[in-house]
Each structure stands twice: as structure tokens, then as C-alpha cells.
Length: 129
Image: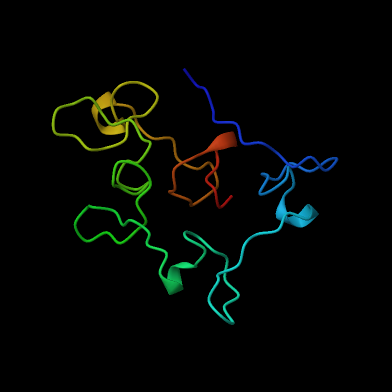
């Protein structure tokens, strides 16, 4: 239905950054907790420590992938928070409808910049152009 998740934004006038603590972003005074290990300057991730000092991050359960798992035990690349193609056996992410580009028969639009073969995004050009 096209709903997008809404993050709360910083309460400082004119700032659209995501809040971290007390209604403020880091730029406007929110304090982030540091790792509790002596002389470590990294930010705490879980249990008051950074990943170097023991904060365990679940890894994607797909063979050969070492990305951090997001939802359902998989990373973004392998389908966390993504709706998959409805064709049996297909693991591609679906595109607007109920099937992926491969099964919809649609041809991907290419970047309109001369000599570029990347897929087009907003405005008919790729992310690079």
C-alpha cells in the first residue's frame, strides 16, 4: 500500500536528522554511549560494549554470506524486510506487483546518460549520474 516507516526527527529547528536521545540528533547534543572497555572510543552496540569487545551481532544464515542479519535471520541482500516473487522456487525480490522483473516480462529501464548501461532510478538516470 506504499506506507513508509516514519522515523522521529530532531527537534532542533530546521534539522531533519533522526533522533538518538532526548529528541535530539548527535549534531545537536544527543550523547551516544561509548564502549565500557577501558580506552575504547567506539560506540556501544549491545550490553554496553562495541562489536570488538563482545557485542554479538547475528550473521546472515545464507551460505557464504557474512553480512549482519536484519530480520528472519537474513541480511538485506537475502530478503530481510523484502517481499519475494510469488513464482514457485524464485527467491528474487518482487517489483511493485507480485512477481520479480524476470517473471513480469518487463524490460529494466537503462540510464539515459550516454554510454551508461546501469539501471535507471529517479529522473531516468542511475545513481552515478
